Image 1 (cartoon, rainbow, N blue to C red):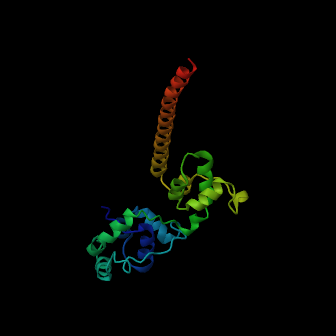
Image 2 (image 1 turned 60 degrees about the vertical axis):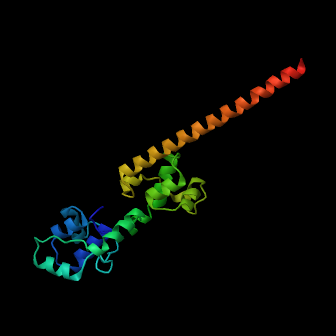
Image 3 (image 1 turned 90 degrees about the vertical axis):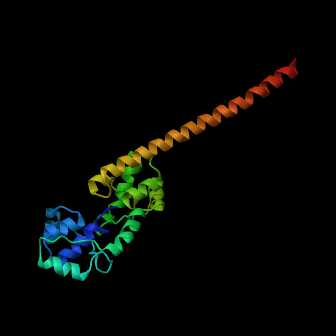
Length: 206
């Protein structure tokens, strides 16, 4: 089980804006690099990400924040009564995409469709946080803004990780192999059924 809060970067934005916690405390709690938290404070990182209140979400208590604000060596602890909620949300694999990156989704879908057409609509939608309907429209070149789309690598844009991308491709390869084996099996089965018929026809012609 992960000890990071749900939507860690959005949570870090809220903690930077609303507390006097140190960058190190926020970084450790959200499982981010300390320089990344500093970048959030300077406005260079997480632009467009809406702050996520960990108190309202039940991930932190106001008391915990106050105590840690007075002692910057004290680490923040995730509320125990909320750990099940965090696990539940992780299992649902909710994908949060910053507002600044959402406009890049269609471009990434086009890139995946052009370069890895073997990926299913569902896989592509999951990778970039889009929908199967949108992927289907782009694949069929009927997306409303298709002529203005520019194919862009979703990994470079940060919409998915290299590992997630590679796993999706491997899964697609396995699916294609299964489908190929099934077709061969059906073909062999049909061939086997035709042979007795040919023998019967030969007997009738004698």
